[in-house]
Length: 178
Image 1: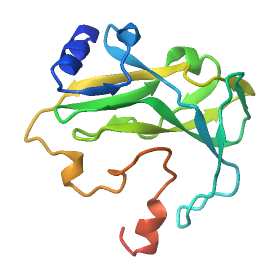
Image 2: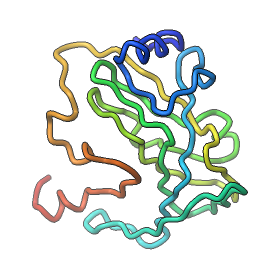
Image 3: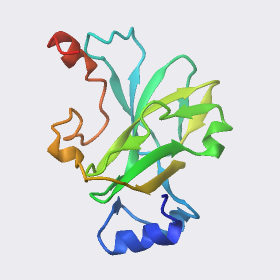
């Protein structure tokens, strides 16, 4: 079951979910419009799952930043979202997709019990200019079924995430875990 816009507002007011900062103007019929933060990590070198990803961080200036094709950018949501009650799905918006920007297609699930600013995987089909705090996508909240299992109680690797995170897969590969 997906929460409607009015149900998202009511759940937030009751403390059952977090959207910070919150603007009721960003509610839609079944989602909340999230905005792009003001920082990017640029991963423009070779990528290897067994090694730490090297990246450089840049600020997105008010006049915008030009994304180039064939470059992996990691961004961050401006809003911190989460809930001990609901799971979340984060998606790019149709308007962003129409600009040839693929955003966050590989990891849209926000586990119950995880309140974060999301790290975003961003790719551009063609050169395109983006701006800080522009609406970039939608987050939806979903009722879970079964025994609650909070992300924070399972020791998962991104639970202390506070900003843009590169892949930590190398920790598992180098540690000999599957």
